Image (tube, rainbow, N blue to C red; front, side, top):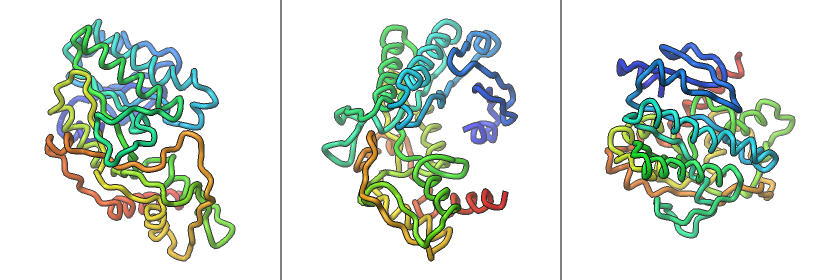
Amino acid sequence: MVEQYKSASHRVIGCDVCDSHSVDKYYIVDQLNPDYNQIFLENKFDLVINASGSSNVNASFINPFYDYNLNVQNAIKILETIRLFNSECKYINLSSAAVYGNPKVLPINEMAEISPQSPYANHKYLSELVCKEYSMYYGLNTCNIRIFSAYGPGLKKQIFWDLYQKYKNIRKDHIELWGTGKESRDFIYIKDLVSAIHLCSLNSNFTGEIINIASGKEIFIKDAAETLIRFLDPTVKIIFNGLTRKGDPINWNADIKQLRSFGFDPGYTLETGLKKYADWLRDEIKS
């Protein structure tokens, strides 16, 4: 997002728990007790994108309070600061398709039943309710986007990174992954995700509404994993252990009619996106 907005000559200000030199101005806050007052006292924003929080499903079972603090409490603090100092600012909350759990019907539209399967998913849903609350009662411009399975250069977690780590440390002629391989996800490449978020910033009505962000294509995990390993080393085989992990959904496929109405059209197939991810991973190996 920083790269996109800077290339369009926007002034970008960053905030995180660690330092970064990629933005014009940068603020560091405490992870568990962030204070955003000074940031908003010194700057006026047109748009705030909240990409902070925890995204570790397994960890949310082990330490739910920590996950709640990062995903819900932090959202409230940002919104309250906006209410006090910059009420005309637009606010986009990055939520997750995890709130849907295991849907009864595919593709999943924004009106589908909510069925969180983990503390993480439940907390993401609570962050959405907070956005709706601040829109309804205080008139803030809020929007929730439910991101499905994002991937691309820079991502060091989830299935493709896990697959790469196992490939890097391979001791046999195969790699073992969780599940059956028949699970499915709706993958979206990072540049498509950035484009989609930008379109939401221009077209959302900012009344706390929900917008799915995905490619709109259901991909089986077996096919996705074999595509990536083919780019890394086609001699390696992938096997699935048949075991499931608590909190993991089975099948996902997003209905993105609303996003398409904003002019969104994915520019990357899984094949082209994973090719770029594999190129980045090879650079990781060299380093």
